[in-house]
Image (cartoon, rainbow, N blue to C red):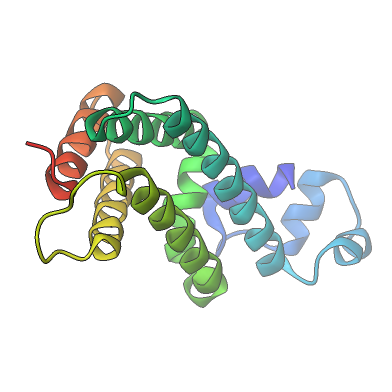
Amino acid sequence: MTAAYTLYAKPGFSATTIERLCSEARISNRAFYECFGGREELLQALHERCVEESLVVVAKALQDAPNTLEGRISAGVRSYMEFATADWRRARIMHLEVRRSGDVLATSRQRAVASFARLVEEASADFPAAAGIDRHLLALGVIGALQELLIEWILAENPVELDELIGVAVHICARALGTP
């Protein structure tokens, strides 16, 4: 898993062979196949681990946040973005390789988005939404915005400071979810 965490992040999933994984991990191909059915299954396990860890961090931040919509948005966004970017490999696996892998992670990605959408919906449920606006669709929209911001940050030659990225993400989420 450690070898895949680094290799799947860079050079990437499509460029990483079983042989390279096994060489890096110092295990035999046979040992690999005793643990995983293929490199796709390993990528899914890595992605799901990253998502589960992220959900725990964000849920804790939301629990500890001030009981205002602004407080929850700020705490949730900051905790996610800091956690996702604290390790470049995690950021790349969760936001680049999940898309580059095609159908390999489609189901895992959909489950992750649904889990994060539930968090957004629950965190904002105590506060009025804009009239006639579906809270679930708003949650999906802000998740998509955060993903695109993180992809831009990951790929940038000179990425903006994390605090600036978080500020933009909080602004987008706050406006979408109904704060002034």
